[in-house]
Length: 448
Image (cartoon, rainbow, N blue to C red):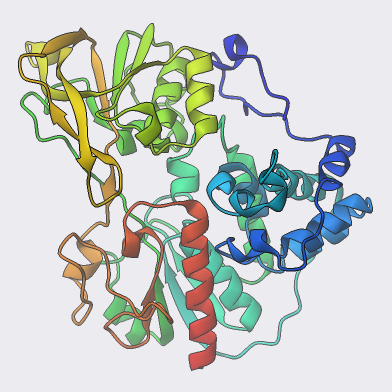
């Protein structure tokens, strides 16, 4: 897929990839052999009918492709951009056995974009059940559950803590990977289904799950995500110039701190160290570049093979000038007058695999050294906010904070309350959260 040159895109927030033309999309679609057993579809968390929507592209019927795609996916423009297809549908593509798999994600993106540019969404005519359902959180899990419940005929209200819906799609993923105008359009499609949004409502403070049930919501879905950042717990971590990735990306993405007219401050320029090796770390590093950093380092305690970020995002970051410092772990944030001046690190070596299957890192004695930086961004994971479980009697959670659910129905230990996405699993992918929201909506529909 064509994209901006690295030297250009590293200085702007415009989307990196340009997307397929119609000719490119049809050419790529013709590579699909439309397998009868559909291994790609079987490995899609929302079970998109992949060979069928690709067939429409071959025929030049892009509207038909969109209609087929949206039978199962409520957020195709988003999924086509941020889903890790290389580990899901494309991983199982038969064409990938002896060559390159069909670029399913790029085709999904093309179809969604084409439809937005050439067709006008139509309000849906849905037979109503007369049953109210509440969805907590307007992120991928909540949006998917809300859309499917609306299609089933429920009267759906989404309660979102922030002033804009979208969850991680709005506050976490940068504009250059996911334009916010697309998120807005996808959410507008939910409003056409009859979904209502109530913003600036913090469940556990503004309202509680019990109060929602008392107000007549027969079912409640919790899709509140994993917005509580993890920290390194090393000396100096409370200095000025240390951010959690959540805060740093929220300031930039949701609060538009990259715009000189924005009242939200953010540190610009200088030398930046980002701790972690996932997609959030890559997003933070690439954002720091665009905010004028002189030099950006990714500091990761394992090697490149163990790095969990998408290969595409790692390659984009390296092309743009991000330096990877691997097999290295921070042990202290150093500074002067409570302000960051450096990051003390230790070299690591890999041993036997741990529970995750990746080789366990351990420090090399006497290998400490200091990286000169004035900003440190910690991107080592997030966990669910405890507020909902603290204010909801009968809602059981795992010791680490994830809500306990029935794997088949997504129902929690509190009757008629369901949950899915990062609030259940901890930080994971957009598409896995969507799959959980879809499963929960089907279970709610069956229960009523």
